[in-house]
Image (cartoon, rainbow, N blue to C red):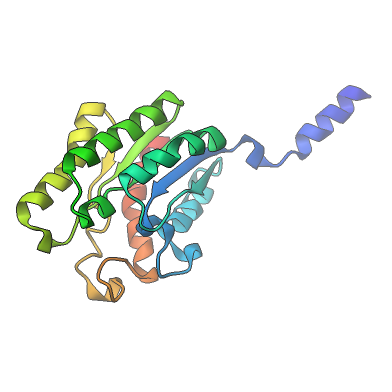
Length: 200
């Protein structure tokens, strides 16, 4: 009788109990600033996963205004609570907008990768850029951090995730920094083109 009850309980357990966890650690771009978060690229990505990799669930741990230092400070608690299989790191834009040290950005992202991997998670870096008025030298140094870390730490990265939308006024909100709801599918598609093959 006990065995029959146990089998019935296991058969009734929701699939989420066995789901693999993906954490998105990001800023306003991933938090869905200015739009309904249910329209954001993270939500669109979840729909793609539901169709192609239904065993994965995304936990969006993004906060508007987040810096790499802020993400690093929150990381331990997130890893402990979520126990993710993957961490998608979309951080750095606010470091750049505040003119913070490129070395500090690189050090913080390096530590995020190392701590995530130590917890058993794989990492995908989502590269960001900053507006051209910050000067070409700083912009180039800032963006170079992502391919450098990809090479040094042997982690994959997605080139600038707003490449297809940032210069299109129809896709951007009035502040020129945040994408509209209409742009979210394009962002998700770009990230998915790099991320989903890693799950196969």
